[in-house]
Length: 191
Image (cartoon, rainbow, N blue to C red; front, side, top):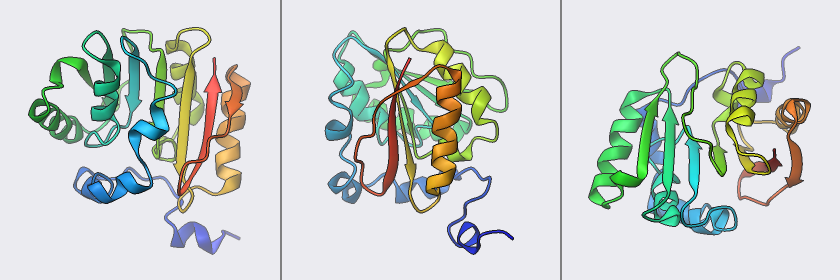
């Protein structure tokens, strides 16, 4: 029998539509998901970082600020509308030259740069083939670099999250730490 909580909390395959992201990208969110507090230990000036499923840029724009003029943020999304909104916001903040938008549609994720850090925030549960997805990230990261996965507690059960962690470990990732992020289940994985 299916768990009724899976239905109540939308724990099923879905992709958050672009028009819903305003609920995630707002000033109120900085009180519990401050990008600088969450990411500053992992990103330094000159880094190439990857934001997978960036939405409208809630983490992408602060990451572009953190990497500085010599760094890059690769913003990868399956929804072209998300990337258009993100880049419009980046232009307003004069950060567009630091961000490389990458629309993948239903195609394979191919990355030209080897990132120093990758972020998958509240999006892995939307990926139908997590093994293939995590393998691509693993193969893309530089050696000894890290991937931070954070998933929403309300959508992703402990069991579902641990299955993702196990897939990552089977691919060669090692658990570096389990950072505390509000309303989230999180793991820092090292290649």
